Structure formats: structure tokens, C-alpha cells
Image (cartoon, rainbow, N blue to C red; front, top):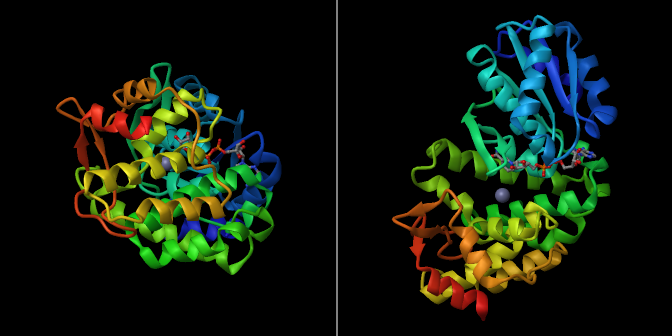
Length: 338
Ligand SMILES: NC(=O)c1ccc[n+]([C@@H]2O[C@H](COP(=O)([O-])OP(=O)(O)OC[C@H]3O[C@@H](n4cnc5c(N)ncnc54)[C@H](O)[C@@H]3O)[C@@H](O)[C@H]2O)c1
Ligand SMILES: [Zn+2]
């Protein structure tokens, strides 16, 4: 797919130039292949430092200024070549550059392939929190080449697997069990070219795209993608980001499934099935934390109704009855303390 970018980009998108935005890890691996493929579009390459610390308004300004310096116009498109950091940042540059130009997402991490590149959310972090400044800007094209995962560090791959397990848990029982059975092999980057990896990427993309197409602005069904994320985000930030996002939401899913079972929202055995799948992927299912600190952190999340924090918990593996439930802190605290 990477080598066919220009053909793919020419299909239905009228653009005359391309700017490849990438990071310092991905650029040396794949930028030359991307620019070779994009040669008819006279591509420029803009490289940002790798890592979440780059997802800021300062980087947004620097990249935007560089595009202006290159005389980039409204007939150009941004090609986001990288993980979710590049995808979110480059997508936000595209959303705002001259009031919006197309973005082509070329995700290179599993997280970006099955999550960040799908659904049109773009943005940057602020000192007050992650993803607080941004815009919905649907990509003109998402070009996914699972082979690029062969160079990804294993820990990053496992973070993506946590999201894939979530996709199964919220929307597709058969997919959930397929991923759970193959989790050990799927967490090895050497298997990037396997049919099972293709099945995982295609399966998760179908689930996420299906949910997002029905509810782009998260008024209802899209909330189910937040399973594991209310507690997961709190655990992630409480760890000072020592835990990766996927590692934190793995633990969040276990705790929220337990919460669902206690509330009578979730069928018994759901927590156990999720635990087994995560363990097969060698993801930790518990960590140490200060319970009251976690509760406090759930309140800084965007998901709230009338002061109560919202949780989006499936009724059973692959099935929902309510998109979200508001739960009293005291109840959540009792689960965390247990
Ligand atoms: N927009 C959305 O809907 C959405 C959804 C999920 C996550 N996100 C965002 O995505 C970000 C996380 O994305 P991520 O997990 O991809 O992290 P990332 O972009 O930081 O990539 C992880 C690391 O892997 C490296 N890397 C990327 N591809 C590689 C490859 N093929 N080979 C070798 N190394 C490679 C990167 O340089 C980086 O060091 C967060 O900022 C999060 O907020 C957004
Ligand atoms: Zn997530």
C-alpha cells in the first residue's frame, strides 16, 4: 500500500502537491518509500520529534509555518505517516491549514491503524490535559499497510492489541474469541505479514468505522468505544504515563467489567473472559494505585453527566444495552478498594 500511495491518492481526491509529516523514528524507515510513491505530487517531508511531547500547539505552529514557507496551497494534501501522535497532529494541521485541506492517513502503529486514523478526531495536547484542542477532520483516505508493523516495538504492538480486544468486547463476540486465541502470535512484530494480523487490522477497522459512521460526534453509540477508558485514562495519568495507553485501558477494561457485573449491567463471566484475552496478549491486568486519586482523576475526563462520571460497559462480550451509565463515586470506590 505504501508504494501505491500516489495511485490511491489520485483516486477521487484532486490534489497537486503532498506534504509528508512524519516523526524521527518512522521517517528514516519509511519516508523515502512514501516520497518515491508520491513523486508525481512533488512531496516535501516535515519531520517532528517522536513521542507524545510533540503533540502540541507549538509543533502545530512550526509545521504550519513550514508549509507556508514551502508555498503550500489549497491544492495540497497532508500525508500523515506515523503513529497516532503524527496522525493527530498532522490531521489537525490539515484541518486548519487555509481553513482545511485533505489529510491522507498512513498509520504505522497498530494503535493508529485500528484507532487513531479512523474516525476523524484530530488535535493536540495542552498543559491542562491531553487532546484538549482539536477538530473533527475526516481523512480523505486511510492507507493501511500492516507490513509496516514489522519494525514496531513489541510493547507498542501490545498496546494496539488491547484496543483490538476492546473492539471485540464491545461489538463482535466471534472476533473477540479469534483475537484472544491468537493473542500470543499477534503480539509479535515478526508476524506483521501474517493473515491473522491482516484479519485483526481489517476486523478492528470494520468495527471502529462502523461505530463511527453511525455516530460521528459521539452523541450515542460512539460512546461504546470508551469502554475501559474512564478508569483507564485515570490510571494512565496517575502512573505519570509510565503505563502506555493500551496497558492502562487493559486494566481499565477489567475493572469496568467488574463494575458492570456488580451493577447488574454486565453478564457474569465477562470480566473473566476479558482477563483471559489480555493475559494471552501478555498485558498486565492489575497495577497499584491510590484509589481516591483515581476517583478524583475520573472527574477531569470529558465524559460526565450532572456531576456523575459516565462509564460505557458492555452487557456481555460483543453486546451493549446502554451506551453509557452514570455511576456514583462511592460505588466505583468500593470496586477499586476491593
Ligand atoms: N484520534 C483518535 O481517535 C485517537 C485514537 C487513539 C489514540 N490517539 C492518539 O494517538 C497517540 C498514540 O499513538 P501511538 O500509540 O501510535 O503512539 P506514537 O505515535 O507515539 O507511536 C509510538 C512509537 O512508535 C514509533 N513508531 C511508529 N510506527 C513505527 C513503526 N512502524 N516502526 C517502528 N517504530 C514506529 C513512534 O515513533 C513512537 O516512538 C496518542 O496521542 C493518542 O491520543 C488518537
Ligand atoms: Zn484508547
